[in-house]
Image (cartoon, rainbow, N blue to C red; front, side):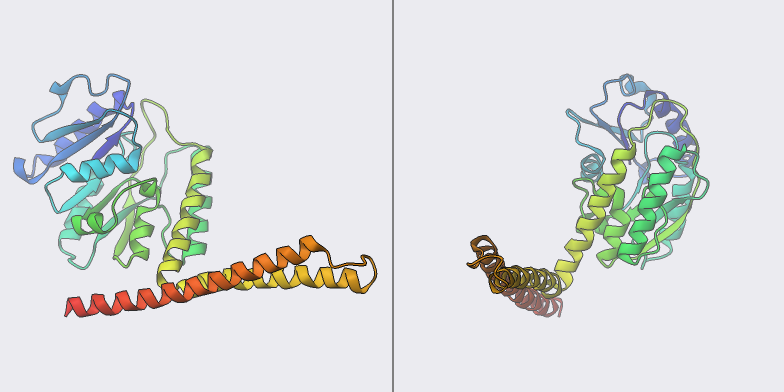
Length: 299
């Protein structure tokens, strides 16, 4: 599966490489789905360049890479799905190596590529290194290159964790935190021949937001009482501090009255902390009930 946006010069190169690898498989055993994300160049104008096993799915407006992949998965008929970028920097041969490993490892759900010798400029490499280091620190995982587009996965994983938003950047981490078995393997990489990169420093900040949201999401799902309890505890400390300041100002004579803003703010925070704790208790009870029901259904 290959999502593309304005990759005119690279499409034919990828087709030739993919066909060179696919000739060893029967025609009906492999399908190649191209997702044209509303490109405005001539990359998909000539349908004759696509061999029989290739299929082009077009988005009539820009959806982005994650939603494009989701659209491709809906079109796919196989239980093992591989992904490449359309910029010709990934090497298709790696996916066939991954497939041989995945088919002989039923306990494995996904193989994520890792660019060992990355042929990109410093502006792309440095933010990627910083982001991956931050990911390892905050998630406790060992992933070194989540940004590598070379990956292969089972359909059951795609159904459990659908592609939406900007999840393609951290899909392997999302799957790992969701309890799936992910293997990271070396992947070949090469410099871009045609077109220009769609990523820049702006991607780094989106990456950070995605990671923080993912960490919060799984923390809430696993132990909401700890997450919301910590938030409530923080609000209680601030509430007590505000009231203490108001009382201190009155006691020392700086003011001859209790500061209304500080007192009201203290009361509001105290009420908010109490409600937050109450919500955490309810969520904890609901999750425990759902867990029991799930275990009973499995029996």
